[in-house]
Structures are given as structure tokens and as C-alpha cells.
Amino acid sequence: MANPHENSARVKGGKPRAPSQRRATRESSRDESSIAVTKGGRQPLSTGIINSVDKQVRVTLTLPGELELFLARAVSDAVELFPNSLRAIAGLAQATQERWIAYASGSLPLPDGRTIQRRSGEYAASIQIEVSYPGGDTMVRYVIYSDDPKARWIEEGFPAWDMHKILQTSHRARVSKRGHKYLIIPFRWGTPGTTVVGAYTGRELPQQVQQWWLEPTRQSSIITGAYTELSVQDQQTEVTRFTYRWGDQLTAADVRGLELDPDTKPGKHLVGMVRMRNPARAAIGSERITFRTMSEAAPEGWRHPGLEGFAPARHAADWIEQLYPALMEEALNADVERLRELA
Image (cartoon, rainbow, N blue to C red):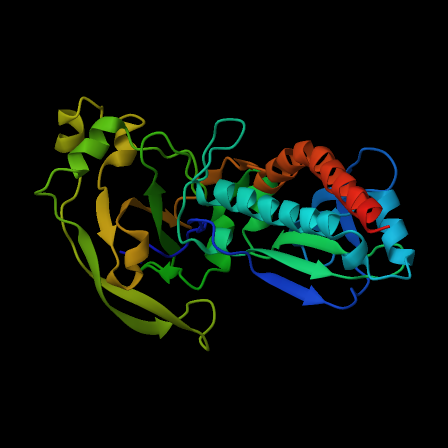
């Protein structure tokens, strides 16, 4: 069998961590495709979320237009003039990052009720803050972004497509004795009440199957080692394969015993399920996986239905948009009052 961690899209998650920030004294010109969220005047908040140059998913925050224009042209130090406003915009950026991470990690359901299920944690960990000082009429800009390759399709989704195309490009493909390329593909299953995000979506364990695996006597399958062989696509490329010690497997009889039909959906898709554990990736825990073979010899089927986007960045931007006006107004009033006291 193939490595259960191969050919899968991993969606990261985890607890929000301290925000990482990248600072720059001046920002280079970027061609951004953003959907602006405005309250009149200059745009304090934008999300569009795909940058047309580097394909990042991002949310951008700046100060309210009139205040930013004033500070950018002020002779005095802006930090001394309006410290509360500058702290407020920094706090809003951090709150946006934390909200986005919460959605991405699955610790917070999306406003539409769906939950992104955590996988490797890479997506959530990729959500960072970049602070820049462009100059001109823009004094400071906070960009909350993800450069994870999966961020775009998690945000926007993707259309249906023929999965057989993978056989012509994947280094994981093998060749049968009859000369047909094939792939052994792992399908990961989510726990009840969650939505699986990845190349294989819509797979949620029935409650009775979840309970079956929670029996103390169930044995997990374990990755025990690895070896390499040359790719069938490119004889210059080495492919890592894995060896296993197999544990319990959900049989057709087991599925029938759980009052599901092993010959029709969803029961037939559960037959052969294993609980896989990789000691090298202990943080992920165990995963419920079934395996299916896609081959050139069987061109029917294997058409992915596509994925509706989850839009976690858009939801985070919509959330912070509701907080932005009141918090910035409060901060500005505090700065004005402070200047009056100093006058």
C-alpha cells in the first residue's frame, strides 16, 4: 500500500500562537487584486484575497484615510501625536490574525457553521503579519497573509476535475505488470461533526464507526520504515516508499454489524479502513484512512466533485470590519483628548 500521508492535501491547524511579524522600512510596488471593504474615503481595510503576483491570501489594514494622510504629512513624530491610534491598528491586525488562525485550525467554527478540520498545522502556522511603512500618503500598513500553497483553494475552493490526470505527473504513481500506471490513494476521514478539508472532502465518520475504533482492543497500523525507488515518470527522481505493520481493519462483516450496508454508500466506502499512526508525526495523532486504487486500466469514475471555498480570511476580514470603526474612533478620541491636555 502507499504511504497514507502521500497524495493528500494537509490543512494546518493549532492554537493561535504569538503573531510573527515581518517589518520593512519601505514596501516595494505590488500588483494586488483586492476586494475593498470601505466606509467611505480612503480604504482602511481590504481583502481579496488573492495577490495577483505571489498568489498570497491576504487581508490588509491601514489607518482611517483622513488620519493617515495627516500623520503621513505631519512634521512631528506620529507615535508621539497619536499613540492610541497606532496601537489600535496594531491590535486590530493581531486580532485579525488570531481570528483567521482560529478558523484555519478548526478551534472556531466558521460563521456558516462549517469547521475546518486540523491536519498538519501548516496552514494555520503560515498566517503571519507583515508591517510596512510605504511612505507618501500611507504611513503604516499591516498585511495579514498566508503563503501556504493550500491557502488559495481553502479560501476560494476549486471546480470538479478528472483525477486520472494525476497518473501522468505524480512521482507516486506505479506501473502494473501489464504496463498500466496506477496510484494507491489514501482517503482520510473526519470525526463526527467536522468537515474534512483536502483533496478528498465530504468524508465524515458515522458515529457508530467512530465508537468502533475507540474500543481499547483496536490495534493501529504503524509506519515502520522507508525505502526509495526511481519514479516511473522520471528516472532521475527518487521516490520514498514506506513499510508498515498492519493492525485492525474494518471488514465488510464489521460494517454490516454496525448496521450499515457494505455494498452501498456510505458503507462500502468504509470497508478496509485502518487507523494509521506515524511515530514521526506524533503531533497529528492517529488517522482513519481507507485506500483505493486509481488506474489507467479503469478510466471511469475518479472525477473529483470540487470544493466549495471556506473563505476563512474573508470571514476574519468581515469580523474585524465590524470592530474597526468604533475602536479606531475611540482611539482617535483618546489621542485628541491627550493632545488637549498637553496643549
